[in-house]
Image 1 (spheres, rainbow, N blue to C red):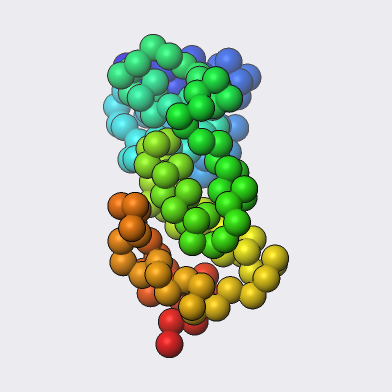
Image 2 (image 1 turned 45 degrees about the horizontal axis):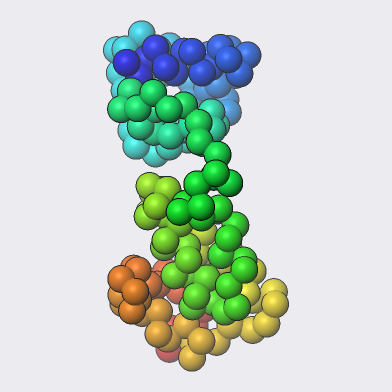
Length: 159
């Protein structure tokens, strides 16, 4: 049960319910309710717990008993920062899509990573419309690409 796993992981980290609540932005009462099995977290909260405890949402939901896996031992799952090895913005965005899909991250995580990628490449050299134009709509490899709305949010001109 989620409630049992949450309590076990919290205690392993040496956190009180109040401290855990502060770390993930919840009240002590909400943590208590989760641990008693009275309520269950939404997906975003579940993802925050997984990140904090360095485990998967599947482990938290008792879909697997594998608590942790080492990315270095799983070459088919790229490291979160592996997009930095890409030579240009387009390839980095495609890599982010791959990372998000293979790790089961949320759309919110994808958007945060897109913002980080654009910021990273802007520091290296200016990013213009031509460089990101091919990212509108689906990417050639099946990735999601960047929509005009997302590009505006990252400071990329969409005119």
